[in-house]
Amino acid sequence: MKEALDLMEERLDGRLDIEEIARAAYVSPFHFQRMFHMLTGMTVAEYMRKRKLTLAAQELATTSAKVLDVALKYGYDSPESFAKAFRKIHGISPSEARNPGVSLKAFPRISFHLSLKGDKDMDYRIVEKEAFTVVGKSIQVTCQNGEQSQHIHKLWQECHRDGTIAKLASLGADEDLLGIVEMQPDNETMTYTIASIAGPEAATEGFAVKTIPASTWAIFTSVGPLPGAIQSVFGRIFQEWFPATGYEISGAPELEVYPPGDTTAEDYRCEAWVPIVKK
Image (tube, rainbow, N blue to C red; front, side, top):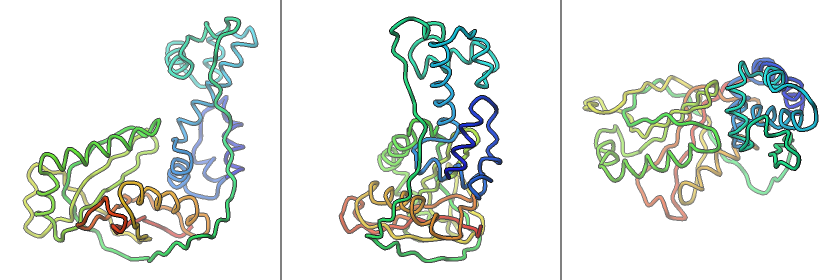
């Protein structure tokens, strides 16, 4: 990961080549972007954007470089797009960055440190499963600034309130509900679906129908109240399990499997299903 971060810093004044950066980390582009997001809470593009605008602000404040030249140097095609992004981060225009005593945001380079905790085992099982069909309700949300969590929480609330959860439970081949995560790292979005596995006679009118491809799954058990418990499990999968194994994420959807029960209870059990391939 250090080599990948070094390369990202070298590319701040050029175009981002995610395939080249992923090769430096010895993983696929999808896995690198997913792991980076889980470890930092930011997309790769969001991190690069903040670093570029940090350096651009420093350059404007300390040199006589033209705004247009700085914009082009850090990958912006026009002064207008640069000014919009600059104001979003710093709260001022690029030209105002030259004013003496002006306050600027500084977003430092991140670094990763391997932490060998070893205080808690991660039990898992690996399962091969054929493709299957689900029915549910989907939203597409941005992954910038951690906004996806609040949108997903709101979707669950709405689906409980309007009867969608009860309807999906009645349509399903079993009583489990699924939370399905489909990442679109290239445009910094994700699709989240609350669903059930479609029964043979399921009436799907009014719901999205998706096919989950045949995959090899690493399955982890979460114990504790939602959403904190399963979020912690996913965090440990990317922080601890993947670096310690010969697997990487395949790019298929990730699943949260929720059996019936009190999801606020300390002993509530559910599962995180992560699609994997050998490196």
